Image (cartoon, rainbow, N blue to C red; front, top):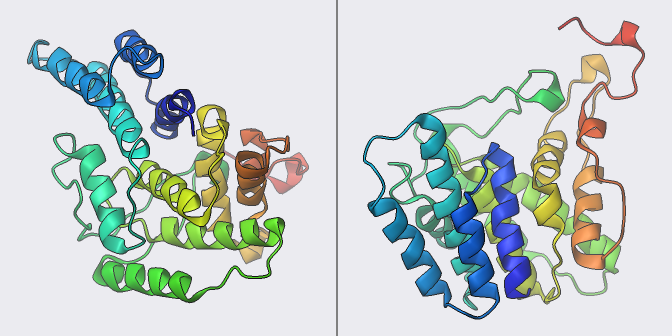
Length: 266
């Protein structure tokens, strides 16, 4: 990944929580990928900028601070050539992204969660229970460590990666910030697997990535709605193989294309 694509990815990932970085962050990003400042200097300037800002801020301004600080932290992590395929790495990425933003940064949640999803018409994915989050993470990582990619075609490889990252995301071990953490971990893992030329798909389609993970982990047999990795696979094929498959969020809605009589009332 080039420095420019790293920044585009970092900024684009804020879409998953409907966050928008400030004009100042965008200027700092340009200075860094132009080679005028280091990533450490970029991070320091963002930190200093908000230290000098007024203590009292509106909620929307707080969210801009989060977008800016998390963006530069993602850029910093993706600029590093270090990685360990382990739950500890996954938790550490969350800690580094959200320290000072969430009190629970890097900590596994101790409560159960639900999240209303637009693409599920307000329903929620069933996430892993709080009592066995650590064990579930260990299981998913252990299973992936044992898997051999030998002999697989590129498409088969992507299909497997989609299953693994879908299962990992479904654990949802953190109170907030799961998708951004999972995306950063995924990119680091993909590079470890040999995918060095990761493009800018995250920059434009991060929300699609999240919604694809939602659809991969939801089913309602009574209403003939089945979980599918197809959308996630399309995203990864665009990301890794430079394909140009259509990535439209409206198509991920569970009732997309269904006749009105088969759609429940709002």
